[in-house]
Length: 238
Image (cartoon, rainbow, N blue to C red; front, side, top):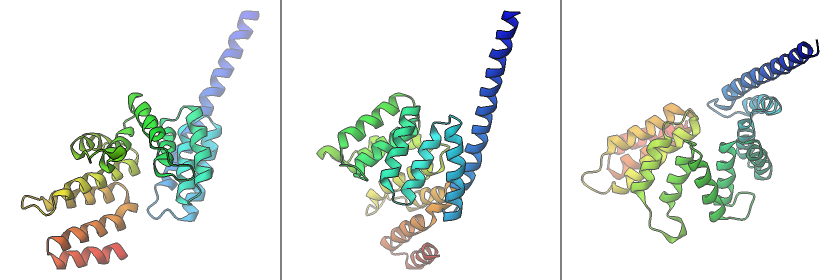
């Protein structure tokens, strides 16, 4: 009957959509495995790009975010902007955040702090956990002539550190350590607490090892612990 034929067509279309989404998820998983490699080698980056391009074609909006991030690794901000814009159109909040970051830093675009902050606020209001990193860092930099607001920045960063995105979580811990270093000259400065943040950052994302060890070396040096400072400097150079 006509009704039976229509039902079969609907079921067939639904099956195609399900299979397409499933393959999109697999491409995202494979892409993330390559993307999160320790050294961000050209080989791994190219492998990640191939998977994310396939995932984007399968309707995964955040694939454009990762394609843009791969562009950023190559300092190709024009391509990054295009991919973030595609992601924004497809509904990717992560793409919207990074597009805002391009405007914040003036990478490939004219600097526009108002546009950046608008994007951050919109994504935060949409319930995106990762937006807390961008909001926290914005306060930490003290834009718009405001004083640096470490207290509220810390509130945001303590949320974003729980992100499942390695770079977001690691960057959150790096910023938390930076806030704690504001008191490094004080007697009550908790060196170990700060070192733990740097250790956590590199544990989450090994790519942060060099940067973390360099910061740890500086902290030890300021506290006149030359032995540990030298050790961290050596690890940073490896």
